Length: 569
Image (cartoon, rainbow, N blue to C red; front, side, top):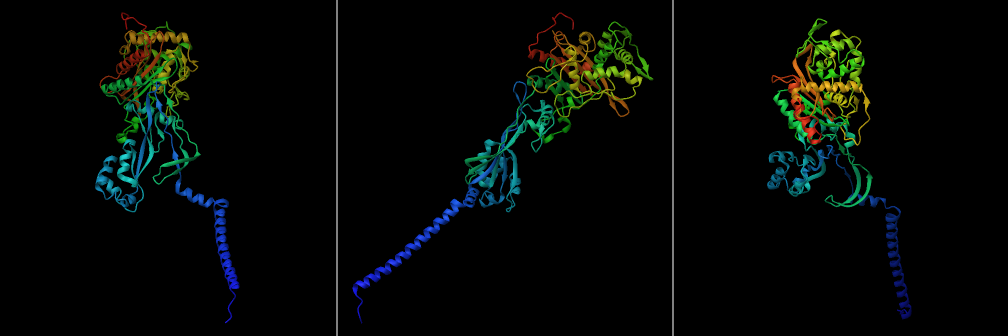
């Protein structure tokens, strides 16, 4: 056999090795090129899918909702506030898988923190296939770490707010409450719901496996905080007025009572109380009848408190005069007897106001006619809302569209029957009397400056009427409303409550007035519905409340006395 030359064999081996290495290199290069191309394709040219999958694992959207706006009194005292709390839900399957459900000690701890029974909690979480169970809506933030430690990942705690009312029942009908959806119902909460309501922000963030925010990425939708409201209410007066009115309600065994105190100079409502009230922080015994603000929703026939305004209409139209002596003996109109509880034979207009003569006012009203009287009542704000902005406010009723007025209707209009008013309307009217006939719109919000006034009646005649109203308190039917060292003008009102077919045996007892007479600062109206403890005249059931609340207002605002101690009440 011939031997291959050594040099040729070495060259052949070298050539074969070179070829194999070239193939290997080409293969490796091809793999690298493929990988590089693939990476370029995935990460540079079309990275969207991987980005989306990565984001799906760490990026989460979440909402942040600011609290609902505060409601405060005129000095910043909080009447309604949203407190941060937690909403507690559970994943029954996860609780079982993690062993929490089977651990009696941990379940006892969870039940104790949530304030529910151990058996009830076990029953709620008994279905091993359920993934969601609601446990508690309002849970204290301070106990949240302990609850989370006991329940682990099987308990889900979410941020929420609970509306609380620090002053409780004294402001409840005025301030109102929220329903289960967080929407205001009743009072200020409903009236200014849109302004108070916040809007949630929606944000994107990177979160870890424990749902903790690692990095905020962007704001998807901007929200806003709820607006804060500063009411015109003086919390000091509101608290005292509620306490005093509640006492009077019980003392007189009345169905309900309301009180409205206004600042004569600005029209601001300093106190608005309705009794009985309710606890806005405890709905277990909630009664919707006590949730409405009766001072603006309930209407009543004002009785004799309307006499000064009807008399002003007569004076303006020259159908009455201060020096005229009127026959005030009982007389019949359309077969019905008109008489007085404080009988007198005759008297001037001042006497008629002082002793609240129905017969005298009946004569004046018949002489004036309903059109002129109703026109004056409308100028004083009756028959329309007061512009307070409180939802649910009643217009009242003037019956000014009626085509026919009988003589008895005209006569009784003179002493407050046949029309219906709210306490707030009556308080506004007496503030107008106190300011010399200058009528200002009332406000439940604190004002930066007094609003413009419109003149409702002749200032000279109103000044004379103020002096006549002073005699009501000093010498007439309103003696219980007298205040030591202050001149008070006011009027009692006692009206039967209308029932089907006529009038029953129950009454509305009212006292309306203002002080101090030399420079009136406050107007106050107290209304007592159906007192059943033996007294029902407005001067007796409402006059003392007027005296005490007005006295407190004059003291708190350092209003100087305008009467010496030795002067006769």
